[in-house]
Image (cartoon, rainbow, N blue to C red):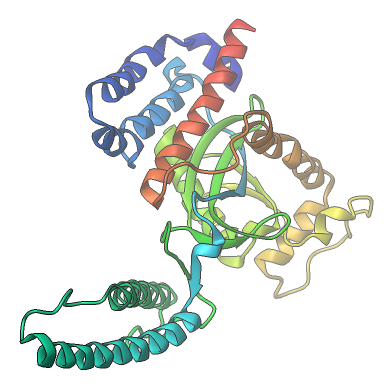
Length: 359
């Protein structure tokens, strides 16, 4: 049974119970509780997305085959102008410390004059508003610096580097409105954003896996997306197709280890010049996994499979961003953004299901 036939076989009846759970969470809880229960990972919306994924599996004869991976930068609910680099923080911290010291000295001088004129304890406010503003700003900058230093230590740890003496790069940024969002390169310019990932099956353009990450680079997402497909859809894909953003020797090794057939572009040129015939003969000794993948995509079969990539996953982002107008997250913080993205992907799948069942 094909993917679409399996879904049509089950129909929309399986949506009733999980949808009711979301409705009860929305209608019976306060707004804060609603966000915690519905938009948090493992909340009602994420659970609903996972349950909808199981609709086709309930038929018992559908097997997940080829999936296509892609990511897109989605603007955060924060301005990039509210971000500050670590280098700028160091400069501002030094300047604010000097200003606070000057204002304290000035306040002590004024206090002494007022004590001499009016008597001790009969002056006005103990802390001038100008000084309070600077101390508040200084406190926020110090908190942001600590957050960036912790982020730098986490990055060093993930790379197997010593954490003790690592310092953030001067250009590493912290956003005061949504600290968990990141500066990323968009289509036209740099934006304050999250990286939204999806895995799409080619027959129905059904999203079989989704997540949100703070990493601008897709290379770290291959393993994460494949794992989330298994978690959310209950099956391991047989084939994975992706563009060169996901290509690395480690990712290709991962696909081999998981016994998943990969069709991963190794660079832009490898799929621009499809008219060139595949070279004959064996690969040279010492050929890397990347070399083998390049040769694989130059074959007729590899080129034919990969050529369909942009007609499978890119239209899904087009439908979400252009047709439905979702170009920016409304919530802030990675956890709630993940729940919001699960809701967007869920509505996409429900629309596909409705059109398949009822035309």
